[in-house]
Amino acid sequence: MKSVRVGAGLGFYGDSWHPVRASIERGGVRYIASDHLSELTLAILQKDRQKDSSAGYARDGLPMLMELWPLAAKHGVKFILNAGGLNPAGAREAIARAFRDKGWKATIATVTGDALLGRFDELVAAGETLAHMDSGAGLAGVRSRMLFANAYLGAQPIVRALEQGADIVLTGRVADAALSLAPIVHELGWKWDDWDKLALGLTVGHLLECSGQGSGGNFGSAEEWAAIPDYAHLGYPIAEVSADGSALFTKAPDTGGRISFDTLRQQLLYEVHNPHAYASPDVVLDMGTLKLEDLGNDRVRVTGASGAARPARLKVVGGYHDGWMGTGMIGFSWPQAYAKCEKAAETLKTLVAERGWPVEDMNVEYIGYDSLLGANADPTYRDQLNECFLRMTIRTQERKVADAYGRLFPWLGLSGPPYVGSMKGVQGAKELLGIWPTLVERERVESEVDVALEKV
Image 1 (cartoon, rainbow, N blue to C red):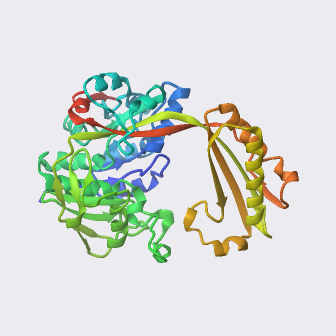
Image 2: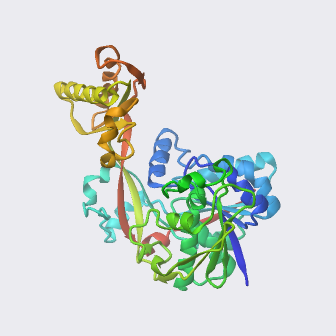
């Protein structure tokens, strides 16, 4: 029976590509699906683009390919990556230039058409409200502050690129799982209305999209995380997908980590609101019918996917200017480390109030106590802390206020609670970007999607 092996690449911007080497060398993969984007990443890339109009793409795509492409070319492995971010053409130019300098050959495809900000007036005129999909708020309140807006494309344009002979496919904002679904559909010839098989492909993509998290990294089972072998050499998951709509998950031999029922089910439910209707641009998956069979020796078979027709509308993530953040941090040592942080926070609140600063929001965190657990922190441990760090942030529409806020902290070094252990230097204001999710009729987006190839 025909099958194809797809390996996980990066799971986020800044992730390590070194485990991918093992998947290429001895994992038998044909494709690497590398996910560089999130809503947060788009905001980071937008800030890059504001400083340099030629930027706006994930800068880790190029060094990853420069290290791995000679090995990938040797083994006939293709890369699909959404490192194009907000500027796929810029990413392609950077990669093509570097490849030419090395004398390397490749066909690079770019998928564009996800960027919609420049089409907002056209879309509104056509009847799209572009209202916030969660709150229902109208666009008018943020329209003048919008900085980017990108639709989540599906696998179809990536398949078109592969059909035209692409070795590397660069996309902007596509659904994470589409990076894996596309080569599966391309190799196995699945139809775009074979919902159950597409649902299996979506499952595969979802299980691969977070790199090491599918093979024991970030494993949250109580105490079991400590039994995950060799974190230092953890192997990324690999899926061998068969034409009948089943998949076998494994990892490259002699790598750390673990592929098991438990590690995969944790990833399966990651970032899922409704497991019975997990929507993507290509298909809607019902996870309730999935069967995960642990075969041992880092092998898990996945079958039983059920799918329904793809949504009529595509999700769009937009970003808009949402003010400025001021930040400061100061740490105190035992005894009464937490109480000292509380007193410092009280003092800083007083200083802000006396100045009459227009602060819209203030966040107080006690690092070492509740910065990760929040309301779930156990107060019985609070007064036993050896050390505690106070981190306070404000949001304001005035940049000068955000700049001035950080300068309140150094004064506490000699004029606040005793035994200051550490203080992060004065930090300047940081621009805040708000996220605007909305929905658009898919035909209005997909009719403008383009696939362009460049041979180097």
